[in-house]
Image 1: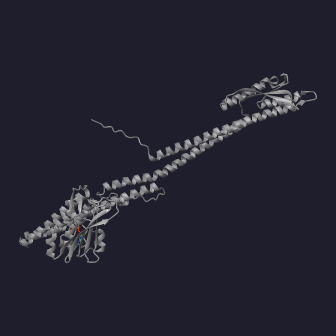
Image 2: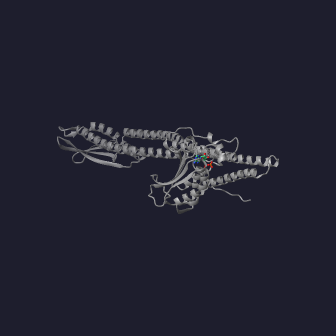
Image 3: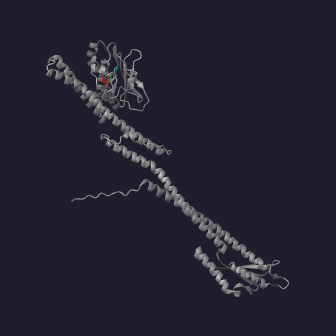
Length: 494
Ligand code: ADP
């Protein structure tokens, strides 16, 4: 048996990614801050310590100078010894020499072990704890009395500098404090990053969940008992612009799908309704003929034939509408004279108009266009047939005019400036369109008066088809009432 293995892409959740990003960022920021503080305090502290060593050396020299007796021209070696051992504890190995270089007092001769132990302690501290290597350094200082050299103090220290015990304690405390604060702030940073990541990820996860539920509701819309799109909305208001835009887009998507579903259901209902009436008429007439209630004479057969024609027209209109609305309309464009097309259309309907006693007036002039001849003809036939259908007296006027418009849409006209458009209007003196119906007149199956249309034979699809064709040409179609003569005016701009 063949088994197929699919490689799963290892993906990290948005929340974890955000936590990781924030965590790395905060740790890096705090780490670099600590390093900078550490380096700076180290540099400043070293300068301070070096200054202290120089100061201390001077103090030692001054203290020894004070022990010079000009009368006996000698130093008080007992006091110097007491002070000297005290200096040794502080890390300063002192040796006092006379002008000839002979030792007057020497800490090393006095207590060599102590001197060695102090220096080795300091060396251990500096190398072990602070990783600052060094050597014992010697510096001579002249001892003067009344500006006369009376000897030399040679001071040995661990160099280039060393930390005293107090300074070591201070530095250690500072480093501990720095480490502690870095740890605490890193922890706080991680907690904040988790909270922040949750706050950002939550709305996105909500949006994702809503989108998934919308998709599920949409694909199961026909199944009873399933969640309906109407019930799925993101109700939370977000203060972040992008998040609020995201939730608004999801809600708009849901509304659009809901509207699409509603229209689809409406279409099915409308088609069923439109088919039911002529079918019922046909069924009634045929059953009456079978039962012998009617004779299958010319009158009844013609009535049946009319219903069949009505049905065939409905099916044909629906077919056209579907191909226009669902398939990409491919326009078969060619160059022709729009006035000529209007003239031909008017001639076709002239006899029907004359039968009703209405005239078709043409106010047109040569107008070359690049458009789909057959599709535009279909639009003009729809509009003219409606005008004839809904006008009982008066006239119908078809006119062409050039309108200046600034909508940036390419005009189908051949010889016009970019912002000029051709306007074709069909104006009649018929019954007009009730104002409340005007906004819906281009919706499919929309008829202002259902009962009347059964007589006029309309399906309520003609204007929808016309609008789709005009829109495919990048144009607009509008309907209004003629306030002066009564009747309706349909205007097409391409
Ligand atoms: P129908 O096949 O019913 O005429 P249309 O889509 O062409 O379908 O028209 C939709 C409705 O618009 C018509 O039923 C009618 O109520 C109204 N209508 C269209 N043209 C006119 C007009 N010239 N005057 C009055 N009403 C009109």
